[in-house]
Length: 122
Image (tube, rainbow, N blue to C red; front, side, top):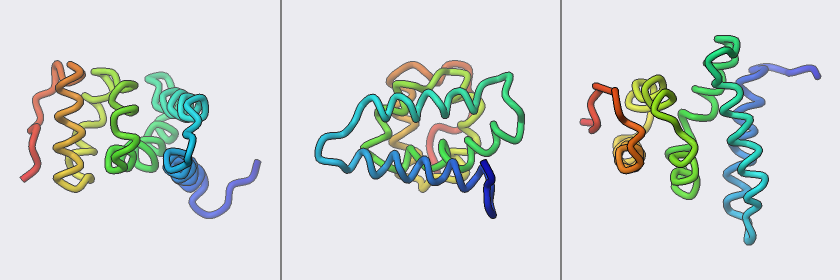
């Protein structure tokens, strides 16, 4: 497989776009969602190459919480470790209302244990 300009980052952004398109379908395909989220988790795995981890963080995880229909599904798949690592990026990059909504859902699911960063954007 040959990747053009943007390489892996473009591929992962396209995957995120496909996810959003699938959520908008009349009959969303839950199996498709599961596969994308499983692949994203694999890319962000602790043993993964740092380049791949960064690519999935900024091309996928940084954007999915801003897409309301996907936010709840993402929260279900987040671990406390993922939140601990991604929270600073999300806090910095998401619009305040999207960050606040996502952080509230993370807290409601108990995935915020051990994080000390601000829970609200100002």
